[in-house]
Length: 268
Image (cartoon, rainbow, N blue to C red; front, top):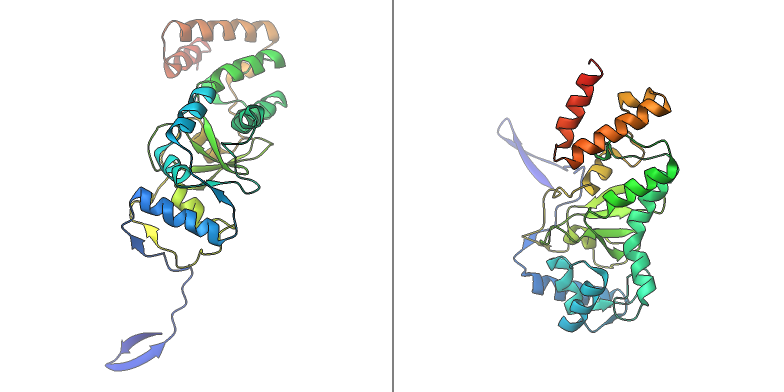
């Protein structure tokens, strides 16, 4: 109940909030937050085994060529969830873990193969499907690795900082921003019993950090395609312009400069 004073008279009225109250902030360290979270997982009947050792982290990161972001590392040091949907970094086969790590890129490549996605920064889309896939595959080797957290939810491995956003990536290549950081993800997680009223770390992100490629995918949607003026040209002209585009890029010209020059070539 909130009390309002109208014309000098106390009048009580009920205020209806359009959104639930924000959890109160708590000055958790990463380690303290990780311990609280693992205890919450256990109380939610989610099996949790001993945390990963330094040796296990080194082995995983060297095998799969990525580095766990610090906040996820701290949680996995405290305890390793072994419930259905969580990646079992200790007992899953190398093939299973490689598939989990590869799924986001494979999902995007599936979109490319179906002619449903082509990122503007990749230049003109080749008409030949195999060539388009080869180019897309090359570009996707340069984007940040997405590390699986739970089912279709991933966190970028780079930049290697705490507070990276969590993305949802499905098998169809659709990408959505799920939460600003890991704390936000676990605060809303359906598998946890204690969600409402839980303390939120004072360091919890209040906006999403920009992540190369994946933030663009989440902002624009995986079905968004940018049409270029050379898309309307015949095969021979298009192939010639593609060759010019990549020669200029290989020569050190920035993408924006190349596009500007090619637009001038078209008389626009």
